[in-house]
Length: 245
Image (tube, rainbow, N blue to C red; front, top):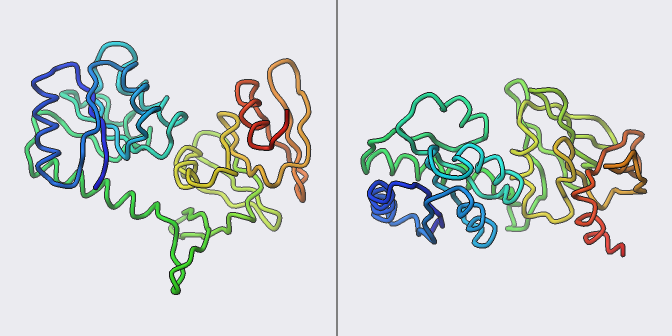
């Protein structure tokens, strides 16, 4: 069963949506929230499969909360529900699974739950015929799907508004998928870490880390002439994973 949290400052509408979700027998609501700060706390502690977010609520609004979730818990999927059509483009730019317009009914909610299930199934690690795991990252580009062995990936880089580059020793792969979307695919693999808004690195490939200016660090990798950047706010996390005191 899927796990979720739901956030809406309107109690009546929140309870109604909660009821529709639970009637699907596919979603267990772990907690409810009335404001953005509470949502961020719940996501951090509970790590739900889905965060159902109203857009207009006290504190950081639903869109701002979704941006934070992409960093705090990239494995948590986002579904927006709102009375406003105006935010749909921005919502989908944040990789939301669905955008429900109030009022909605049980049939529409079941469609949303099905979309979430499809998204989670697509994220699952590809299985070998014998039941083992093939650890690969699936990316798409120009109508084709490429499967990249995880142990080949050196780092992933955001390049401009619409391109992400996956750097490997043999070649670079380009995809229109966002770095946040790829981070979701890699969320179960602790050796991949988001270290900067534009960089996600394979810690197993790190060769050296050096200070760069006053607020960041340069990472050099084995088998790669290109570098990545670690922001100062993420350096302690990297040191912890690399067991550097």
